[in-house]
Structure formats: C-alpha cells, structure tokens
Length: 325
Image (cartoon, rainbow, N blue to C red; front, side, top):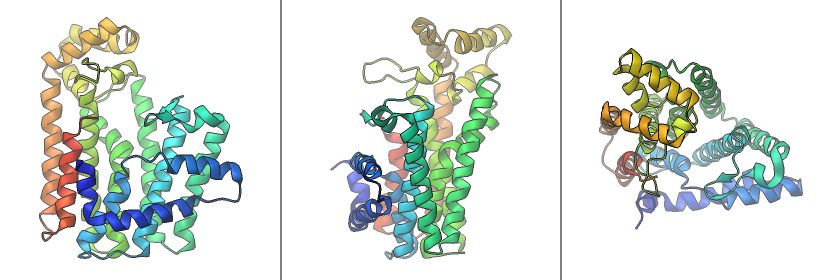
C-alpha cells in the first residue's frame, strides 16, 4: 500500500464524503465554469490539505467530525485550488501535475476569473454557514501567502536574503496554508481551545520542513540522474544556497551572485553552482534544519493520546521529509 493510502486509512470514509461535498461546493449555473471545475476535480493531487483537516479534527475529538470539519476542508481546498490556478497564470505554466493547466486550455483571462470564482465560493461557504472563526483562519493564510510571494520577488531582485528572511518567506508562502489546515481541523471541533494554536504551530513546522525538502531537490539527482537546478535558473534563494553564500569569501560570493543573476541559463555554470553549494556543506546544513522542524512537529503530537489519527499524522510528518518528489 502506498504511504499516502496508509495515512488516509483512518479517514477513508470522511475523504469519500468530502469529495462529494467539494464537488457540490464548486457547482455553478454557468456551463463553461462547470466544465472547467469538473476538469479540476478529476485531476486532483494527493489531497494532503483536507487530510490534515480530518486527521487533526479526529485526533482532538477522539474520532468525531462534524459539518464544520467538512466545510473547513472544502474551503481550504477551494482556496488552495484558486491560488494554484492563479500561480499557473503568473508563472506562465502550461502543465500542472502532468496535465494541461487551466490557462493552457482556456487562456489567461478565463483562468484568472475561475481562480476568483473559486476564492469567492470558498469565502461564501464560510459566511453562509456563520463559520467566521474558520473564515478568519483562512483569510489570514491567503494574506500571508500573497505577502510571502511578494517578499520573495522583492528580495530575488537583489539576492540579499538572510536566513531569517528566507524562513519568513517560506513560513508565509508554504507553511501558512498547512498551518491553516491544522488549526481549521482543531477549530472545527474545539473552537477557542488551546489546541487551535497548538495545531497551527504543528502545521507551520511541517510546512517549513516541506519547503526545505523542496529546496534540497534542486541539488539532488532528478529523474534523469542529474540535479535539476530549477530554483537557480529561476533565481530563487534556497537554504543550501544561502548557507553557501554565508560561508564564502568576497570573491567567491561575487562569483556565486553573478552566476545566479546573470548566468542562470548557462547549464555548465548552474552545474558549477550546484557543486560549489555541495562543497560548502549547504546540503547537510539544510537537511539538519529540516530534521529540526520535523522533530519540533513530532514533539507537539506527544501531548495527545495514542490513536490511529495521531499515528497517521506522525506518518505524514515523516512522509514530508522522506518523499522522493
């Protein structure tokens, strides 16, 4: 059994019912919209975000979920999908999970409008049911994701990212959405409890570990047996690169920044940068930070009694850093 299927086992029924509710939450009177949302629903990924919502809710409430839990999972998936559709437009990307992106099939204008539609559907699902506490959690996540993206763009122009700024960027860009899933799960069954903040922190730590793992992929062999170097080509400052910069003298630093800024399309130069980062210990440093985030996340789970849901969340934490893609 695949790891993800194993993790899903204690919430299999909830996930099946969720898929139906999620599909209903997307429906519209406009035929074109329904065609596009049908296309989106049938190309779903691993559905990690709703899984976090249900596992956390069931761990805290000893196996119970309610309508708020389903709505919370649907809202987070609607808003996450909206951000992906918009991201593909911004990045001018034609593929998403191996399929054509919405903008590739229906052009940018329609893709932007579909993203807006999904965002509004998510917000209205909360408002119509009076889930204002859940709505606040989600709205904060959307604001932080936008801020994180913009902070990264601002810093990429000068490549002057410190480790602290890097953590702030990934906290907002990646970790905030997983944090929202976990605090939503807690809030749906135990509103205003200490668990809501505890699980938000848990999700944030997993998100941080997840992003550092993504950074490491840039320096490890891809499917064709070569490091990908995609982040370097896109001038993204990743943790291994930031560490290598901090370990460099003035001339090495100048060469490194110049390589990323002006020669990032030169395959040979990108390979040299990857080699240099490895020599400076950038990989080991990033890996140690990732494991640190993982251990902190697992420590939070220790406060809860043993259950199949807790076991699945532990598996999820380990899966995040052991995954191969």
